[in-house]
Amino acid sequence: MAAVWAHILRRSFSSARQLLAAASGEEHQGARMWKILSFVVAVPGVSVCMLNCYLKAQQHSHERPVFVPYDHLCIRNKPFPSGDGKHSFFHNPHANPLPTGWEDAEEH
Amino acid sequence: MAHQAHAYHMVDPSPWPLTGATAALLMTSGLAIWFHFHSLLLLYLGLTLLFLTMVQWWRDIIREGTFQGHHTPPVQKGLRYGMILFITSEVFFFLGFFWAFYHSSLAPTPELGGSWHPTGINPLDPFEVPLLNTAVLLASGVTVTWAHHSLMEGNRKEAIQALTLTIILGVYFTSLQAMEYYEAPFTIADGVYGTTFYVATGFHGLHVIIGSTFLAVCLMRQVQYHFTSEHHFGFEAAAWYWHFVDVVWLFLYVSIYWWGS
Image (cartoon, rainbow over all chains, first blue to last red; front, side):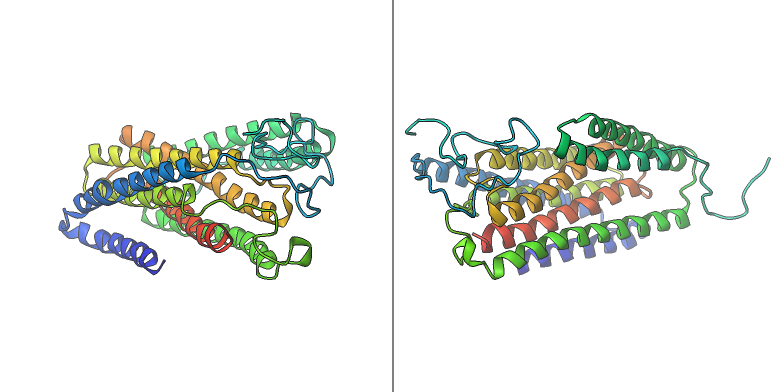
């Protein structure tokens, strides 16, 4: 977290320095450094995280949890404004139970 | 021929503040009508009027600045103050939602099972898609800085490349979040956990869409030679906004996704 803040602060300081230096015509390597950072750190970093997600997703169990009708969850004090009023906006029948339980009868 | 003896911009009369205010009224009342009477008409009218207002108001600003030369250094300084103040107001907007989150999560009530996350909630794994989203936004912060430096050094082609890459990363973030919203095992109606999660991340996602749009407008302007290496405040404002969106995400990630899991 501290490294992230240091990175952000360094970035804003370097832009300020860049503005001062631009007048005197120096610091032509500014863009080149950020281009290198983009292709050597930023994009590979994203790729590594993508791979990590893919591998972790394969390890997931495909079992659905048992539905427990907790009082503090699945609240329906008034109907939702969209659809039939019983389903949230991003409702997913496989992942989101209704107050009465799972909508479909599938095992998976 | 008349001319002004000062460097400031006396703006011509314009209808867009009025249409914008009307749009705000239509959207707020439209939202209430949708919630209670299930009609979307007022909301749609408001959104249409908002869109038309934004396009025409900002088109006029571009005309005044880029083509008519009204954005002298003092005027630009005022625009900078304006953008900084606006972003500051947005920081306070998000502070409210973080307050709500910490209020509920630091002292979870017995009704929730006395714990955070509440009993029965399966939080998202912070080291799966949320971590990818963090990498995507941090990467976009690097690419937008590359774009800025390219712009300042007069490198037109690289500025376009870097800005395009930044926008692609922004759109990628939005699609990942939309997928997460669909796949999540909890909804907005799952108690205070669901509410704080979706309201905070939802408003953040809206800001990502706004920021990506702002950057896309800058890309179109850069392609059309609006920016010079010395004068490109529209781009700087978009980049500041984008960094703000990135920082809000970092706080969301650490607080809600990581600590809150």
